[in-house]
Every structure is written in structure tokens, then in C-alpha cells.
Image 1 (spheres, rainbow, N blue to C red):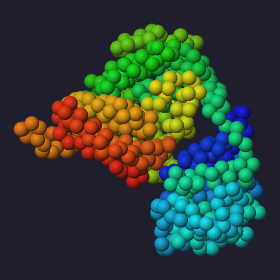
Image 2: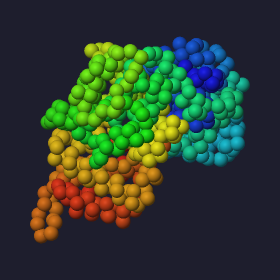
Image 3: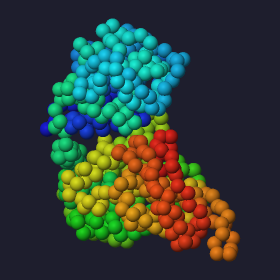
Image 4: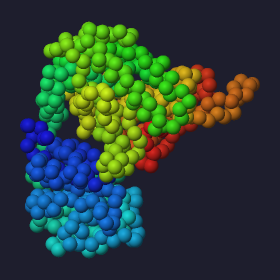
Length: 541
């Protein structure tokens, strides 16, 4: 539900676009609260939320297909301002009496649109007769507008690139204003929520903090919570937020699965010991994880195995909490939590973010296509008899960082590059062995050290090394080598949903490669990954 302090809300109806959450991000950047709901449940959400405006997302379906998704009729009858994007434009046209056809020239990627008439959507931004770059991603297109609509912009293959009914305040675009590849897109969305819908910029991280604290307290009551710390900023922020809400009802569990970066465990444990009085159990489960991963090459199986073993550890620790045996299998234990009653933990807290969720949802569970599973998404085994607490589930990475600063986390920790829960397991394509882990861990540490020395760490969204299942011939001294290839990866991003490779100068790459080859036995060749997201993902697996 919307924050108590923020009654104004925008409902985003999701038709399955991989970038729907970017719409939410742009709305929040404009200081307005919003919620995303899949089209299947959007009618109930519309009635419950009583939004001040509605945005219809893109999606992978074709409006021309029988049974394709539709927006609730109540939305169009409400008189509320509507912004309909791509598939949203197409279903709006069909539902209001227009027509959509396939078989025309598609548009994917950058395109230029020409403004042909004024619109409130363009106020202070776009002018008639001028051309502006946008991002298209469509195969079908509108061929007949509903009554009351008129064309405001067009492109080579989208004659109705922008079509609006100004009187009914319905604005439709064939392009995607939410992505960074539409340079003015964020301002267009801000125009919609501020100038057209009349909403104020009153949603902040401070408001979100208050809302989530209240929500956690209502969800947990007097129950006990364990929080899985992964070593990244997400779980750390979740832990500090939950601790602020329920105090010593929370116990954090840091699981060392043997796939951490160099000195990662010491850093995480030190942060919570030195800065926060949060009960922390440090479990060394590396033998169990690495044993289960032996001989496994498929990336999806790796993620599932790691997720299962995390749950096994959490299940064990949950039974100990309140039972008097806490720490029996732990290598490092801070003082035991003193909750309101002596019972096992009933809740498991995770630092799940929305990018994790959107990449893990399949068509059977929602409208999006599965990209890759995330170890912390998908619910809990019934045997655990626990409920999930996920206060960051609707946030982007940069929003989590903003929340971390709001909570007072040290900047050195808040600004760390993302590190996946499965750790180095998904940076070793193919079979995982202790030898490979040792090689990658050392090479990755050197790479990050060179980045810091060059003053580039804070300019990069995420940087890491990948140990490839490839061996090549090399020459070191006067001898022949036949060793591994290491790939370096560095990207710039705002939210992790899209990303571009970081443009290192060649001198830096040469310096980093030389040092890695000289210092890490087992590597004789280094390459740099220049793939954007999409078409690639940030991580390799």
C-alpha cells in the first residue's frame, strides 16, 4: 500500500516488459510514489489503490493475438490521466475503437521522431517541427486511431509514434520513454505525473524508511527474524532497516559458501561488529557448498543448488535461535538475541531487489520471460515453515544505496560494487573447483586494486573478473604455457536493468592484464568484455 505520508499514487499496469520497473524508477525520480501490478490483477489493484494516474507498460505479446492482455475497462472509464507505452498504446487503441496490425516494418533500437503537433506531454521540452531521438521496440503498430485521438509525432515506421486525446488526458507513445536510450524520456514522464496528473514531489527515501519500518513491525509482530547476509550492500541495508524496526528480534546469519571475494567475510563481519549492535552468526559452510557444486556446469543448476544450501543453513540456524544452542556450528558468534519469547525464528529476511525479481519471473507466474533465476527469489520450502521479509523488493540498486545513506551506513560500504549472492560460482562458467576459485579470487582482487589505484572505482557500476573454460598457448620467459583465459568486465548503469561497458583506455587494460598474468599462476591471457545489457546480462551466468 502507498506510504501513509504519501496519499498520491500512480498505478503501473505491467504487460510483461523487461523494463517495466524502469517506468517506476522514472516516476520515483520525479518524487511520486507508484506501484506495479501485473495486468492479471490490475483491476483489483486499481480499486484498492485509488491512484491519481495510470501508466500502461510495454510487453512481449501481440495485441492481434486472441487472448492477449488487456487493461481494465474501469481505467479508461475513470477519467484519470493515462500514459500508454508501446504495447500499452496498442491495447489502448484496440480497446477504444482503433486498430493494430502486424506485418509492417518493425523498429528495434534507436529512432528519430518528428513532432507534428503540440501536446501537454511536450510542455517545455519538445517543439513542433523538430526531431528527437527515442528508443523503439515493436513489431506491430497502430493503423487506426480511436475517436478523439490525434497524431502528435511520427517516425519512419511508426506513423502514430505519439498519439493523444488531450481532452480525456490519454497519452500514448510507441517508443519507450523509460529507458536511458530515450534521452528526454524521464522529463516526459515527469511532465505526465506533474503537469498532467498534478502530483507533487513528496515521495522520498525518508518516507520509504518510515513506511517499511511500520510494515516490518506489522508483519513480524513479536516473532523472531533471521536475515541472510550475502556480503553485498542489499542484505546489509535490509538488515539495518529491519533492526531499526524490531531490534533484538533480529539475528543476522552470514554464510561463507567458499565463493566470496578476497577478505569478503572479514569485511562483512567487521562492519556489523564495529558499527552495529546486531546479533550475528558467522557460518563457514564452504565444504558443503563446494561439495554440492562439484561436477556441475549448468548455470541454472548452480543457482538452484546454492539457493537450496542457503535455505538449509538458514533452516538450521532458525531452529537454534531461541532454542539455547545458537552458535553450535558457527565459527564466529556475536551475542545472542534476546527476543520476547524463546522460540525458533519464524521469518527469513533477504535483500531481494526488483531486478532479481524481474529476471526470475516466467510467463507462468507473470507476464515476463525468464532471463535467469536468482538464488533468493521464488519462495521457501514448506518444511521451513517460515515467511519472507523483503523490505527492498521494489527498489533499484541506487535506491538501496540512497536508503543505506538515510540509515547511516558507512559510505565505503554503501558505494561498493554489487556482488551476487552465488558469488564466484557464476563467474566460473563450467565446473567449479577449489583451484579455479583460488585463481579467480586472486585475479579479481588485482583487477579491483588497479581500478581503485586509477581512481575509477566510483565511476563504474560493477567490475569483476570471469575465469573462462578456455585454455590457450602462451610464452612466459622461454617456456611454453597452456593456461586459462580471464575476462574482465566493467559496466556503467543507473539501476542494473540496462548497462554499457566502461570505456577504459588501453593503457589501463594493458597494465591490469600484465599484472594479472605476472602475479596469478594459471592465467596467460586476458580479454575485455564490451557487451552491453541488452543483449547480454551484466554477469556471465
